[in-house]
Image (spheres, rainbow, N blue to C red):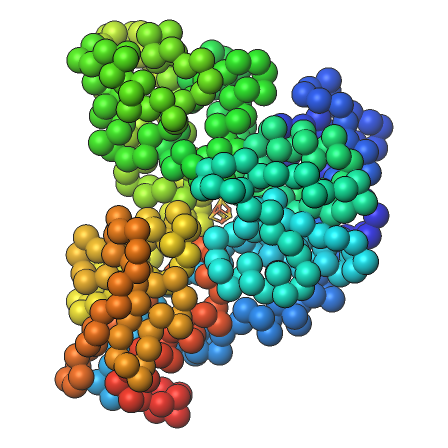
Length: 433
Ligand code: SF4
């Protein structure tokens, strides 16, 4: 990889592709000058050591060597076979470190959190990267502080078309770490809008990825979207499709999760289903089936065949982590610990899956496990605040603890959590290794 600007916008559906001979097709806005990078700066080797020291975990390596199981003093810890950093997050963090190296004298900003992990974001702040956070969840970022000679990193979730255009107008350097799997969803949603389908997106309407994905519907003019959080909300949309509730009632419930000017009578006649990449895969698939069935019941099979589409856009990393947890749960476990940011969608999906069959604690960081006090600070599913639970591990006797982590949790934090679980039963590192 060279250090020259990489003008590779070919795989971004929201901007014009730029090649050696200029734009290949007159799509979207004007081509971007040499300030847009999405393939790093050829500095991978230079930042490797720093990344390893910041995020690698010795205990996780040991778990891998020992078939993902460690046993000592009656405590067995079993790690899911797929866990933690995904390819998209690894790439985004790597590029952020490369960016800091490449531009040591420039101000470097992040358009929101690079990923939803407090430890990783704190590390980037320590490196002098300023994270621009919206004033409220789901709000817009204020780019007023950004100047043309600054550098702005776009996170793995991507940014909305509106944000991208704002940064382009400022003329700052943009380092785009949007994950390829997110770009695939954008292509799907963009094609729905182009063909006159409203995108029904299974996701969280305030999540950065879903906001960016929904914005793609406006790429070719006024396309439409509606975001549903779960099966209950999808069923409410189905009820409208089948004429069981009024447009007014639907808008009362979904007014804040639809595109501007959304008209249920007009915009729910042709529907394409997609999803945020990190949702519960099983639920996303079921929502596609449910909405398709409602379309058939309301309009007949022939109409539905011509006016309804559904594609599974869950990313492979999310799918693999959910599959690995399902496999882990086939073994008898006494308790499950899920590590990852409370605003991390894929971590929440893992916690939801685990809590269906075993006592589950979702912790934001390893530090939430206090071996001295014997407590665990966690956020119960659906709750807004954390709670401290004492005596979460029995004081003696055999106990089996399952563990997994969301795609934004680094291995050192997972290893730290494992050490703290053993330490809660007064088992030191020598006994484990
Ligand atoms: S969770 Fe999936 S979509 Fe998100 S960054 Fe990781 S690989 Fe990409």
